[in-house]
Length: 318
Image (cartoon, helix red, strand yellow):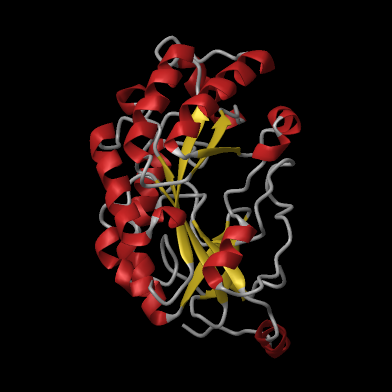
């Protein structure tokens, strides 16, 4: 297959600043697509399909000249850990979601004890500074009430106290695609006062364990806890890890109160087989099954193949 790319685009791209690579908000690449990722790293590039325009493909280079940092989002990177040596020349860190919901909302994940062990192993490999714990989303239901979160959070925090220094929390956001699922699980809304009460208790539990709590795109809460405003794609942390000045603005494509730096995500929606009940990145189990069936670890794109109808472009600017 021949791919035609405008020469003017190539010239612009050569002058393009480095990029932060998100891998990925849309799916769990370390848990499910590690072999594909490391093959892409070896070949030095990846193609990413636009989630809103199927035929639009972005060419993203994966080499030290163009990558400022890799940010890995995961719930179970156990199979990724043995291959970490392959990314040693890049700045990177992990956002590890560990909620301990088990069969309540996360039926396809290993038991909490195993995930804690994986978190600890990863931290020992990469250092506590390179692994951020996400307790996210916080869901209130008959089985996950106020006391559940206090006991659950405290139990996990005890195990992670020497393995991370930061925990990012947020409350469930009821996107339209998950409203029916969550209602069927008896999830109930709570007031801002109730959330603040829980936050204060979680901060009390985290402080003696040397874990700092920050918030993810929580509009009401961030105004009250301004010192705890955080970002998952953290430009200050990336500057420290890269040992360079990193030029990046806030990502305007995220939620209004999101403070994340702009990045390029190399994942795809409807590809995560964890099947967590609250997941906004999946629309149906059947779509996930169909996507997973056409995943080719050797393909330059996560799901399926590039064809002649696809239009290739480059990412510009930060």
